[in-house]
Image 1 (cartoon, rainbow, N blue to C red):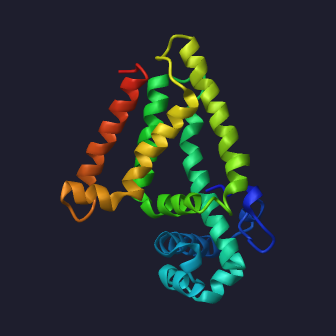
Image 2: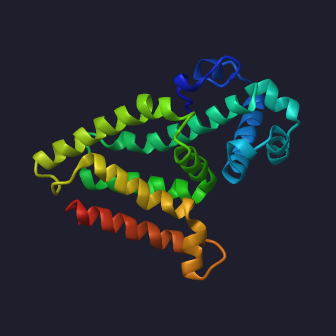
Length: 222
């Protein structure tokens, strides 16, 4: 996991430069705290979340949270940065030399897998955006925006080379994000329509194939 340095504030103690000095116990504790924080922030939002609730969710004393992350706001910032870093990683395969169908399909499948494996991450991210991205705003400008511009240029290169149908690369990313993240953000709505208490693995697999097929066909890659 890579936490963008631009997210780290004094007292966060979670930037990449510090990571190399962490022992296995500290790394394990921080992982438990981040996972617990993700769950609590997803359900209570930043305002409703407490360090006590996060400590209970992580199974660690509250003092550990303050020791490793300093404050609730610092912890929240690291949670958001971790989510964004994990979401950006699958896009690294979108390069001019790559096969368009394989690269785009891999990206979609990775995003769908993240929605299935860490739905709370998507909900924390969505809630932050719905509130105007007061904490995430800088990372959107410095991490997400440059990545999208770079990868949209790759897609435009594929289009100009006749390797895929003409599409707007930037809006293709918006389409993929909305199609994949909805299975986490609006799982309750989808489950209600499907008549199930939650989205079962079989239903998520079916959804993944649908999204992959729909996007690839729209890109002229099927």
